[in-house]
Each structure stands twice: as C-alpha cells, then as structure tokens.
Length: 349
Image (tube, rainbow, N blue to C red):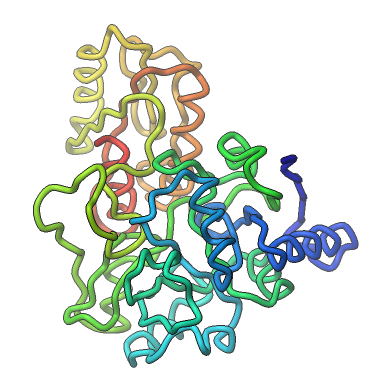
C-alpha cells in the first residue's frame, strides 16, 4: 500500500488544493480506509467509527491490543445523536465549556457503536476536536471518526505528519498534513457521571478547569500495579502501563528548580556508558557528556504549555540522534504539568 501524503493549509480550507485533499481523504474514510488527521492535540488515525471492519484495521495498523479502547471524534452535536444515550447534565456543561477542544467524555454508547471501539465496555470516549482540518474532514466524510494517535502502539505520539509516516507509512491509505499540532499532548479523558468526576488521563483541559465548570473532580487511582498485558479491557484510552515511549531509555529527574542542574549532572554521570541525550529547557545547562547534537531545546521551564507542545517532538528527535538514554527533568504537577508528568511516567516504565 502506498500512503498518500496530502497537504492542507488550515488557514485556506477553501483553496482548490485543500478541497481536493479533504474530499479524497473523506472518500477513503467512507470506503472503510484509514486516514491520519491533525487535531489540536496530536495526529489521530481515523476510521469510520460505525464500521467494525474499519475500526479493526486501526488496531492492525497500529499493532494496538484489543483491550485498549479508542476515542470517537464528531464535528457537531447533531452527529452525537444516536451514538450515546443518555448525556448527563455535567457532561453537557463540560461540552459547552470545552468543545470543540481537547476533552474526551466517557458516555454510555448505543448499539450503533461496534464493540471494537470501546473494547466491549459500555462507555465510549467521545470528543469534538478544535483543529479546523479535523472538523472539516469529519464534516465532509459525514460520519463519526474513531481516532487514536497515529503511531505504532506504545510509541511516542505523533505531532507532525512526518512522525506519522515514520511509524505507519505503507500501513494506512493517507495522511492529511497540516503542520505541527498546537497542544502536543492528548486530550483529557474523564467520566462525568461518577462522583466525584474521575479523570482517567490528564490532558490539555486541566483538573482545575474541570472543577470550575462541573464540580469535584479527582484523578483515577489504579488498584494495584498495572500489567503489561491486562486480562480485561482498560477503563479508558491511554491508561495502559507503557505508552508514549521513545526507543531510548528515558530517565526522569525530579528536583526543585535551584537544584535541577546538579541533579541532571548526577544522572548523566550515572549514565556515562550510554549515548546520552537530554530534554533541556532553556533555563538549564547541558549535563556533562551530552554533546550539542544530542540536546533538544525543550522550550521554557516557566511555560508548561510550551513544554507540552514540544514533548513528543523532542523525544522523537533524540531517538533520531541515536541516543540510547535520555535524561529529562520532570515538571511540577499543577495545570498541564499533570499531563506532561503522566506521559513521561508511562514512557519511562
């Protein structure tokens, strides 16, 4: 299979080239094929969410285990009708506040949704993406799109079309290239029907924002250690033991700001036998033994949203530089820092 590389300028969706690319991609989806599409978070691997065979193709292309459910993307509230029932009041408040946007709600699915989407569970993760290309593609296709991240299972998530092709070239029909994604980490996933609201995956919508709109919310607490191969379906997308991982060994360093340079240096010395790379925010110095070509300029420590946007690009760049180990400072947990810590923690397991 030859993967089509279709470029679209998000600022000019009415341009003839964009219309042609979007129509071609929409036709592939309606026919049961796979199209990687940009969202505001990461690139997703899209398939017709109402077609069980198409959804099965997503799992095959990604080499994704069947116990890990996927998220369904819609372009309007009207498209949600017939997919979920009922919609709790708290869910409606969250939709009004954060849709379109990086928030996935776990809602009771109807019989229209194949078991493969939810790994057989009664709740389906659904969101309305904020990226103009994703919304236009879903509108033109006229169907809800099942869309996990467009990468091999467990690997670092893709934030550019080039990242998608590194993992899936020849395994999917097309990728819509609209440049780098804006947010850089996946959507927040939560169950609005639980008391308190349970956040299964931290993301760009923070726990503080959720509480402000819908009341008490807490992070999901795992009951005992996770297994590499669970015997039952995961309760939500993205909560498996090892996700988001580079090829290199990832070593996390947690310390107060004033001590971080010293702690990074200590970690580097312990790893002196490795071909060592570093995720390095602007405020810190390169650890000893890390050459300039193996340093990724990871934005500013004082701007967590910037760190989130560049996270996966940095891990992929250091893999490409041939690093066998990567030292990475661990941001504080407030706000979007919770999402960064979650991704790094799963990548380092």
